[in-house]
Image 1 (spheres, rainbow, N blue to C red):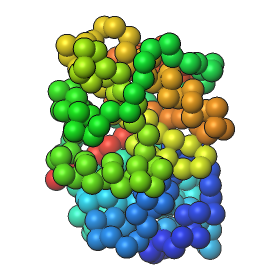
Image 2: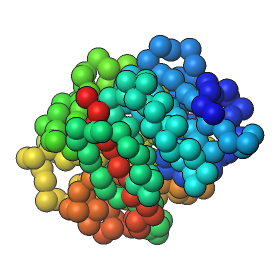
Image 3: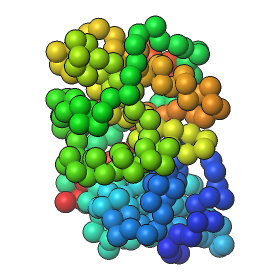
Image 4: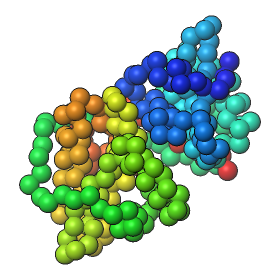
Length: 249
């Protein structure tokens, strides 16, 4: 049975699964008081077996071996999901028009302190940098949506952004896109085309990941290409699972 999730449903697990981190982080940032987010729990014989979150028309799933996959697929179709992200070990029949798959990696590197000057960039410069790196698998939202979300999460202490400048320009950045007390997901790893092949992204990723693991939290990244996976493997990460993102509209 799928029903609206209550706070105690999502808070009682507190597991370090990266897909659960996506769901719980969104809940802790927005709760149930906004029209553009939604949260559901699936139960089987009284046991919590799945969690579902929605941001606009983008859904994230936390699935287990006890999840009723067919019920979830029917629920997503009924909700008019635009895209759905989930652990690729599970199969959902969703009649997708496009799919992206890749690796989920977890940081296992040693403690690292960068000798480069690292700053906190302003959001306008950050957005311009991200747009310069946009691709089929790195899609940047509209500016106002990006700005409102990042500011909201930053005010809650749920978003950390670091960057490196060269000649007064923001050259590279990385940020946390999901945060809970136990785990963090990094994203928006970008280096402007003018400043690539200088090791800037690796430097920032290692510095931020090391800072977070020192707090006792796990650090995950989602990689949608072999080249990105090689980059993270060379930056202290190990593959922990796989993901799939399907687009329905």
